[in-house]
Length: 102
Image 1 (cartoon, rainbow, N blue to C red):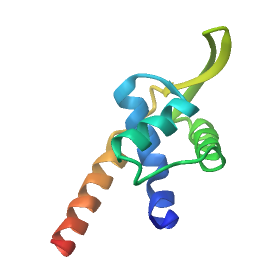
Image 2: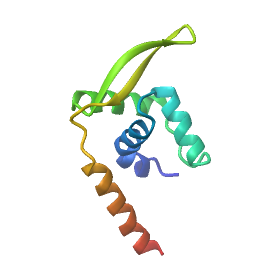
Image 3: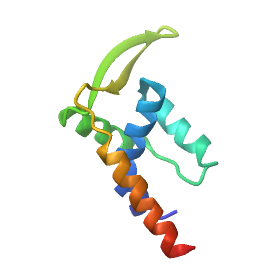
């Protein structure tokens, strides 16, 4: 799949998955994307972590280190400033694309 398609939606994908799960860490997010898309979309760490950091800087995400299985992991969750508007915009855009391609 063309990586430019994914790049345009990566922030939205990350926010949606974290909102749905409550909190998550990077590797878990990559696995969730691959599982849900049956391998059609895969996100590598080089693309994911800059997006996580950007969302954190924008105040969309909050991070916290936790130890799980004797291993510290940085977990991300949505901040109180999160807005559903972006997710609604993505759903509208996808519906418009479906109208074109169907």
